[in-house]
Each structure stands twice: as structure tokens, then as C-alpha cells.
Amino acid sequence: MEHNLVGYGSLLSHKSLKETINNKHFKPVIVKGYKRIFNIAVKKEENFDELNLEKSKKSKFNGVMFKVNEDELEKINKREREYNLEEVEVYDFKTGKRLGKSLVVVDYFIKIDRKNKLPSKSYFILCRQAAYHISKEFGKYWDKTSFISDEERVDKWIKNHKEYDKL
Image (tube, rainbow, N blue to C red):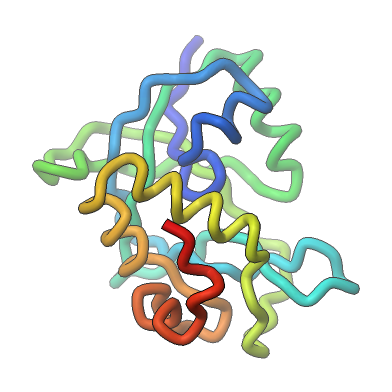
């Protein structure tokens, strides 16, 4: 059985995905009803965050949809062990046309800390570069639909954090 899966952070990167499963054909998509936010502390003693999703009726984000078989889905589950799989509707990034259902990974069990934590620099750069590698339009949309833990949009935040702007 095959499943559609949407990558929205490090899974936007073929190089990162290849560490877990074989490379896939990516279809740029939009997911509505969620906000992409850097709010998962990697380790409690470290002071940086990684990406997650929060339910938000007014929000949407872009990602890439790709097909995985059962074995690959199990490998993704191990990689994203802190997350849960959730089914969402996906829409074509260019046309907005409904494409059907897909899975995303979400962590509902974290305690969100909004104390202006910085994203993990190497992780942030990997995700952002992967988004811009898909296309400039896709990358700009990623910036507008990604948030830092204090709720600031990346496209505004990056102006004051040039050390993260490595395109």
C-alpha cells in the first residue's frame, strides 16, 4: 500500500530525505488549517527549536508531497519518532486545485515555549535552502508561512537575523 506524505521542514530536502529513504518525486503543495512553527526544543538543555505544525483555521503552509510504501512510512516514523501522523487535505501549489488526502507529521505533546528561542541554525538553513531550491516562489511562500516560536513570520524575522540568511 502506498501513502502520500507531505514534508514541510527537513523533508523538503532530497539530501535529508535520502538519509532515511530513497529520493522521491516531489509535488509542491499547500496544506490549509495548520501553521508551520519552530517550537520543538531539540533537547531541554539546548536553547533552540525545530519545526512543527499547530492547528490554525486561518493558516496554511507549503510543502512537498511524495509517495511512500509501508516500509518507507515505518522508516519515516522512526525518524520523526516524536511526531504523530495526521491526515490532511492537500492542494496544488500553483493551481490551488484539491489533490486529495495526505499524511503530515505533527507533535501535539510538546509544551510550547514562546520565550524567543532561536531556531537551530543548521536545521533552519537546511529547510529554507531546500524550499528555495524547489523554486524562488516556493521559498518566498515558505518564508511567509513559517513562524519563529514567538509567532514572528520568518520573512520579517530574517531581516534581523542575517546569520540565518544563507541562500
